[in-house]
Length: 487
Image 1 (tube, rainbow, N blue to C red):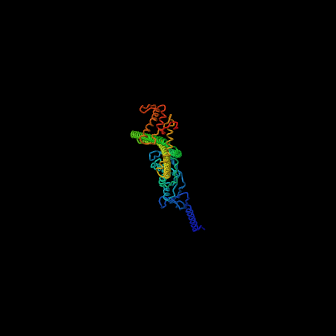
Image 2 (cartoon, one colour):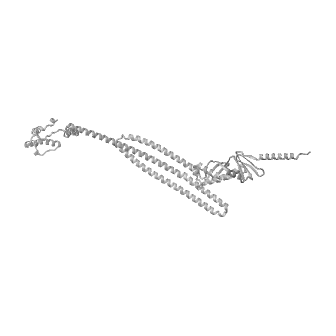
Image 3 (tube, one colour):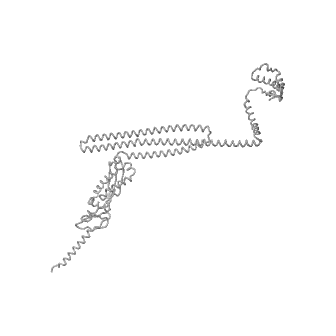
């Protein structure tokens, strides 16, 4: 009895079902989170179907699959001799961290262009793209912009690199610029310039503090000078004004001389740099024109040499700028700051002394005003006490007689007088008899005065005998007295 055909067919069907099930199970692919599943073949969605996360069934025979690794990789970029906007070659060593993108459209680009490549091959493609984009970005920026604002430079590089990397399905995660250098030394010159500016600012601060200290000293000196007499104050003011004028004129001439010298040095340096650039350009053009017939290789060599000469000329110009113009500007600023500080100090001193003089004059005016007011009040009380202005005037004259007598006594106290004659011109009697007595009484004193002066009077005026003194006394009456009686 043979094996029943129904059982065989059932067994065969079961085997087929099991094989189909196992095939379906093995062709159902689950995608890890750190990979991208790429199904290619007859997908009905273009060249490939990409899946990040989840799972998908891969039809046998008509479809196949592969994975793209999402692990980030670092692309070292040794960018050298990149031309900036000023045609200065710079070296910008950079590292870029990139990875395959998980965005829908970008995963399609990665599946088309990167599937089957090793990570090293992907790095090489990314490196070429990044180098080209960084050169393009550097060509649009000045060295000072690149060095001053690293964040803006990295943002531009990131935008440009990301746009181009997305075309092959990559995304830039991070851009890190390690250092920036240039052949001409321009960045070093910028550093020196910043250092010089910082030093100048420090000098300005020091000068400002010194000015404040000197101003305080001047204010205290002003308070002291307020007690000095008017003559000393006037003399000091004259000396200070003359010294101020001298210093102002001297500082003005010094400042103008420094400005002229600085301008001449800058113009001379610029002219020499331009002349060297023109000579180098002319030499490069002449050499390039002479070697055109030698072929494309020699033309390339001459072009490279011309670029090198231009870079050298730019470097020389930057060196001159850093070594001549910047120090000259720093010196000029230092001189200007010192002159301004000295001028401010002298102005403060002059203002303080002028304030002292004004206050002293005001105090003296107030004192004189008070004295006059007191004297006027005293005169008013004197007039009231004397019963009128005539009585007050008499009292004032009597009061001053003592002072007048003292002055007269002091004036004659050292004169060599042997006698004093008191001569009264009348006896209180009127008429011709009184006039005669007066005339006769005048003669003896006249003879006495003539003797004192060493003169001899004429004979018709009479003569004084031995008893002349007695006769003169009898004629003159009681108004003439001898020196002893007067004493």
